[in-house]
Amino acid sequence: MQIIRDDNWVLSVGTFLPMLGVLVLLVTPKAQEAAIKMIALITSIATVAVGAYTLLQFDFDKAGSMQFVAETNWISVIKSTYFIGVDGISLPLYLLSMVVTLLVVIYSLDHIPSPGNPKAFFILMLILQTGMAGTFIAQDLILFFVFFELVLLPMYFMIGVWGGEQRQYASLKFFLYTMFGSALMLVAFLAMFFKTGAESFAIPFLVENGAGIAKNVQVWIFAGMFIGFAVKV
Image 1 (cartoon, one colour):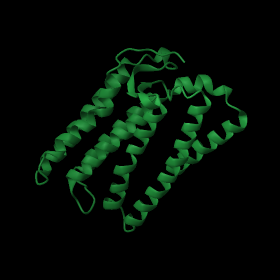
Image 2 (tube, rainbow, N blue to C red):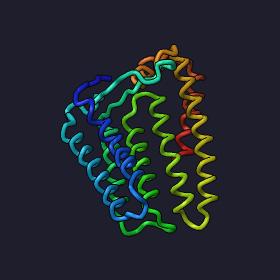
Image 3 (cartoon, rainbow, N blue to C red):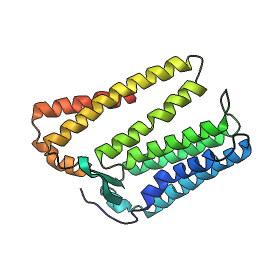
Protein backbone atom coordinates (compact mmCIF):
# COMPACT_ATOMS: atom_id res chain seq x y z
CA MET A 1 0.00 0.00 0.00
CA GLN A 2 1.42 3.34 -1.06
CA ILE A 3 1.41 6.02 1.61
CA ILE A 4 1.41 9.73 0.82
CA ARG A 5 2.47 11.96 3.70
CA ASP A 6 1.17 15.48 3.11
CA ASP A 7 -1.14 17.83 5.02
CA ASN A 8 -0.81 15.41 7.92
CA TRP A 9 -2.50 17.83 10.32
CA VAL A 10 -5.86 18.01 8.61
CA LEU A 11 -7.36 14.69 9.74
CA SER A 12 -6.50 15.31 13.39
CA VAL A 13 -8.09 18.76 13.26
CA GLY A 14 -11.24 17.46 11.59
CA THR A 15 -11.56 14.61 14.06
CA PHE A 16 -10.86 16.42 17.32
CA LEU A 17 -12.42 19.81 16.54
CA PRO A 18 -15.76 18.62 18.01
CA MET A 19 -13.95 18.02 21.31
CA LEU A 20 -13.04 21.70 21.38
CA GLY A 21 -16.75 22.43 21.14
CA VAL A 22 -17.32 19.99 24.01
CA LEU A 23 -14.86 21.90 26.20
CA VAL A 24 -16.62 25.19 25.44
CA LEU A 25 -20.02 23.65 26.18
CA LEU A 26 -18.78 22.27 29.49
CA VAL A 27 -18.08 25.79 30.79
CA THR A 28 -21.26 27.28 29.32
CA PRO A 29 -24.09 27.64 31.87
CA LYS A 30 -26.95 25.22 31.31
CA ALA A 31 -29.49 28.05 31.36
CA GLN A 32 -27.95 29.70 28.26
CA GLU A 33 -29.68 27.39 25.80
CA ALA A 34 -29.36 29.76 22.84
CA ALA A 35 -25.59 30.00 23.32
CA ILE A 36 -25.32 26.23 23.74
CA LYS A 37 -27.15 25.60 20.47
CA MET A 38 -25.05 28.17 18.64
CA ILE A 39 -21.79 26.65 19.92
CA ALA A 40 -22.87 23.19 18.78
CA LEU A 41 -23.93 24.52 15.38
CA ILE A 42 -20.73 26.51 14.80
CA THR A 43 -18.60 23.54 15.86
CA SER A 44 -20.44 21.24 13.47
CA ILE A 45 -20.16 23.70 10.58
CA ALA A 46 -16.44 24.22 11.25
CA THR A 47 -15.92 20.46 11.30
CA VAL A 48 -17.67 20.07 7.94
CA ALA A 49 -15.53 22.92 6.57
CA VAL A 50 -12.36 21.04 7.55
CA GLY A 51 -13.83 17.94 5.93
CA ALA A 52 -14.54 19.91 2.75
CA TYR A 53 -10.93 21.13 2.70
CA THR A 54 -9.78 17.53 3.07
CA LEU A 55 -11.95 16.54 0.11
CA LEU A 56 -10.59 19.36 -2.06
CA GLN A 57 -6.99 18.44 -1.25
CA PHE A 58 -7.49 14.72 -1.82
CA ASP A 59 -5.71 13.33 -4.90
CA PHE A 60 -8.38 11.24 -6.60
CA ASP A 61 -5.85 9.96 -9.14
CA LYS A 62 -4.23 8.15 -6.20
CA ALA A 63 -7.42 7.16 -4.40
CA GLY A 64 -5.99 3.70 -3.72
CA SER A 65 -3.16 5.21 -1.69
CA MET A 66 -3.31 6.28 1.94
CA GLN A 67 -3.26 10.10 2.09
CA PHE A 68 -3.00 12.80 4.79
CA VAL A 69 -1.02 10.31 6.86
CA ALA A 70 0.19 11.19 10.36
CA GLU A 71 2.10 8.77 12.55
CA THR A 72 3.68 9.23 15.95
CA ASN A 73 4.40 7.20 19.09
CA TRP A 74 1.38 6.67 21.31
CA ILE A 75 1.45 3.61 23.58
CA SER A 76 4.97 2.37 22.94
CA VAL A 77 4.81 -0.31 25.64
CA ILE A 78 2.34 -2.29 23.52
CA LYS A 79 3.77 -1.03 20.19
CA SER A 80 0.69 0.96 19.30
CA THR A 81 1.02 4.23 17.40
CA TYR A 82 -1.16 7.22 16.59
CA PHE A 83 -1.38 6.31 12.90
CA ILE A 84 -4.10 7.91 10.77
CA GLY A 85 -4.89 8.34 7.08
CA VAL A 86 -7.65 8.04 4.48
CA ASP A 87 -8.05 6.54 1.03
CA GLY A 88 -10.80 6.62 -1.57
CA ILE A 89 -13.02 4.31 0.48
CA SER A 90 -12.68 5.79 3.96
CA LEU A 91 -12.78 9.46 2.93
CA PRO A 92 -16.48 9.49 1.87
CA LEU A 93 -17.46 7.76 5.12
CA TYR A 94 -15.33 10.20 7.13
CA LEU A 95 -17.09 13.13 5.47
CA LEU A 96 -20.50 11.50 5.81
CA SER A 97 -20.11 11.29 9.60
CA MET A 98 -19.49 15.05 9.67
CA VAL A 99 -22.45 15.91 7.44
CA VAL A 100 -24.84 13.64 9.35
CA THR A 101 -23.77 15.21 12.65
CA LEU A 102 -24.38 18.70 11.26
CA LEU A 103 -27.85 17.68 10.06
CA VAL A 104 -28.67 16.19 13.47
CA VAL A 105 -27.53 19.38 15.20
CA ILE A 106 -29.59 21.56 12.85
CA TYR A 107 -32.70 19.45 13.39
CA SER A 108 -32.16 19.33 17.16
CA LEU A 109 -31.99 23.11 17.51
CA ASP A 110 -35.79 23.14 17.80
CA HIS A 111 -36.47 19.46 18.42
CA ILE A 112 -34.58 18.35 21.52
CA PRO A 113 -36.28 15.11 22.63
CA SER A 114 -37.84 14.86 26.08
CA PRO A 115 -36.59 15.46 28.79
CA GLY A 116 -34.70 18.28 27.08
CA ASN A 117 -31.28 19.40 28.40
CA PRO A 118 -29.65 20.70 25.18
CA LYS A 119 -26.25 21.04 26.88
CA ALA A 120 -25.88 17.35 27.67
CA PHE A 121 -27.42 16.32 24.35
CA PHE A 122 -25.03 18.36 22.21
CA ILE A 123 -21.99 17.41 24.31
CA LEU A 124 -22.74 13.74 23.72
CA MET A 125 -23.44 14.37 20.03
CA LEU A 126 -20.06 16.03 19.51
CA ILE A 127 -18.23 13.28 21.39
CA LEU A 128 -20.04 10.79 19.18
CA GLN A 129 -18.85 12.70 16.11
CA THR A 130 -15.21 12.40 17.19
CA GLY A 131 -15.60 8.68 17.74
CA MET A 132 -17.28 8.11 14.38
CA ALA A 133 -14.72 10.13 12.44
CA GLY A 134 -11.83 8.45 14.24
CA THR A 135 -12.94 4.97 13.24
CA PHE A 136 -12.65 5.91 9.56
CA ILE A 137 -9.13 7.34 9.77
CA ALA A 138 -7.43 5.02 12.30
CA GLN A 139 -4.67 2.89 10.77
CA ASP A 140 -3.68 1.22 14.04
CA LEU A 141 -5.94 -1.45 15.54
CA ILE A 142 -5.65 -0.19 19.12
CA LEU A 143 -6.37 3.37 18.00
CA PHE A 144 -9.31 2.06 15.98
CA PHE A 145 -10.57 0.15 19.03
CA VAL A 146 -10.39 3.29 21.19
CA PHE A 147 -12.36 5.36 18.66
CA PHE A 148 -14.84 2.53 18.14
CA GLU A 149 -15.47 2.24 21.87
CA LEU A 150 -15.66 6.02 22.28
CA VAL A 151 -18.91 5.81 20.32
CA LEU A 152 -20.36 3.44 22.94
CA LEU A 153 -20.60 5.86 25.88
CA PRO A 154 -22.53 8.75 24.26
CA MET A 155 -24.83 6.32 22.45
CA TYR A 156 -25.62 4.54 25.72
CA PHE A 157 -26.65 7.79 27.41
CA MET A 158 -28.48 9.17 24.38
CA ILE A 159 -30.57 6.01 24.12
CA GLY A 160 -31.10 5.82 27.89
CA VAL A 161 -32.07 9.47 28.38
CA TRP A 162 -33.68 10.57 25.09
CA GLY A 163 -34.92 7.23 23.78
CA GLY A 164 -38.45 5.85 23.54
CA GLU A 165 -40.68 4.25 26.16
CA GLN A 166 -38.33 1.31 26.83
CA ARG A 167 -35.18 3.41 26.62
CA GLN A 168 -33.57 2.07 29.81
CA TYR A 169 -34.02 -1.53 28.72
CA ALA A 170 -32.80 -0.68 25.22
CA SER A 171 -29.71 1.17 26.48
CA LEU A 172 -28.75 -1.68 28.83
CA LYS A 173 -29.23 -4.25 26.09
CA PHE A 174 -27.18 -2.11 23.70
CA PHE A 175 -24.39 -1.78 26.26
CA LEU A 176 -24.20 -5.51 27.05
CA TYR A 177 -24.30 -6.61 23.42
CA THR A 178 -21.65 -4.13 22.34
CA MET A 179 -19.37 -5.01 25.24
CA PHE A 180 -19.60 -8.67 24.23
CA GLY A 181 -18.77 -7.73 20.65
CA SER A 182 -15.91 -5.53 21.79
CA ALA A 183 -14.36 -8.36 23.80
CA LEU A 184 -14.39 -10.70 20.80
CA MET A 185 -13.02 -8.00 18.53
CA LEU A 186 -10.18 -7.17 20.92
CA VAL A 187 -9.23 -10.85 21.27
CA ALA A 188 -9.12 -11.11 17.46
CA PHE A 189 -6.92 -8.00 17.26
CA LEU A 190 -4.52 -9.40 19.85
CA ALA A 191 -4.40 -12.77 18.09
CA MET A 192 -3.46 -11.08 14.82
CA PHE A 193 -0.84 -8.97 16.62
CA PHE A 194 0.91 -11.95 18.18
CA LYS A 195 0.61 -14.18 15.11
CA THR A 196 2.35 -11.56 12.96
CA GLY A 197 5.34 -11.31 15.28
CA ALA A 198 4.05 -8.90 17.95
CA GLU A 199 5.82 -5.99 16.26
CA SER A 200 3.04 -3.53 15.48
CA PHE A 201 -0.71 -2.92 15.54
CA ALA A 202 -0.42 -0.82 12.35
CA ILE A 203 -2.93 -2.07 9.79
CA PRO A 204 -0.53 -1.83 6.79
CA PHE A 205 2.00 -3.96 8.69
CA LEU A 206 -0.65 -6.53 9.62
CA VAL A 207 -1.91 -6.69 6.02
CA GLU A 208 1.61 -7.26 4.75
CA ASN A 209 2.47 -9.95 7.30
CA GLY A 210 -0.93 -11.54 7.88
CA ALA A 211 -0.63 -13.92 4.93
CA GLY A 212 1.78 -16.05 6.94
CA ILE A 213 -0.81 -16.86 9.61
CA ALA A 214 -2.05 -20.46 9.55
CA LYS A 215 -5.37 -20.86 7.73
CA ASN A 216 -7.22 -22.28 10.73
CA VAL A 217 -6.04 -19.36 12.87
CA GLN A 218 -7.14 -16.93 10.16
CA VAL A 219 -10.63 -18.43 10.32
CA TRP A 220 -10.85 -17.90 14.09
CA ILE A 221 -9.53 -14.35 13.82
CA PHE A 222 -12.06 -13.58 11.08
CA ALA A 223 -14.86 -15.11 13.16
CA GLY A 224 -13.97 -12.95 16.16
CA MET A 225 -13.91 -9.78 14.06
CA PHE A 226 -17.06 -10.68 12.14
CA ILE A 227 -19.09 -11.36 15.28
CA GLY A 228 -17.66 -8.28 17.01
CA PHE A 229 -18.59 -5.98 14.14
CA ALA A 230 -21.92 -7.71 13.44
CA VAL A 231 -23.07 -7.27 17.04
CA LYS A 232 -22.24 -3.56 16.96
CA VAL A 233 -23.91 -3.01 13.62
